[in-house]
Length: 207
Image 1 (cartoon, rainbow, N blue to C red):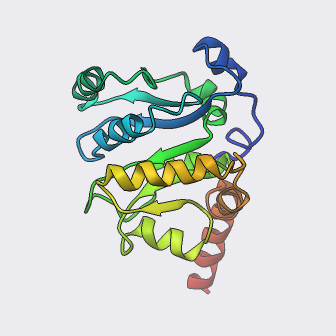
Image 2: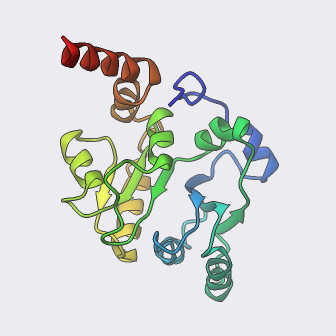
């Protein structure tokens, strides 16, 4: 990751003004691929559970194979607190990330890969607060156990659990900046230290 480009403290006014989002509105953001493996319908169900919270807005930004179905489900649920937007320009990504009070990393059971999803790397780089759906024994689950506070890890495919986690985080008035997440990105995702460690290991193995 380029942690000089993706960093905390960026102004989110670009998207608040573009999408007419009041400063007092709390934003729950899913940004990225809207594929079948994510099981993103639980985001819609969580939005339905939180529809009485007039200060909370769910945003789904991106595209993918499940996009049309998700939009149809959102219409059926009459979700006034959820909006869809297409992929945004890469140079505007820091401002988009800064818009979120809570980021979502949603996957179905058994879908957690052996590497970090690219969207999570971006969230960590900006020091974002995140909810991750992953089983304890997956790479994502183990990451949250090893680095306490890096994100909130919950059971996949359970909209009630997701809604409860979001309620608790919103009611706790959690700071948007997560220092544990940001420090992890600086130590493990920033290209300079990563490449430096690689060079050191190669030199050791060749000695």
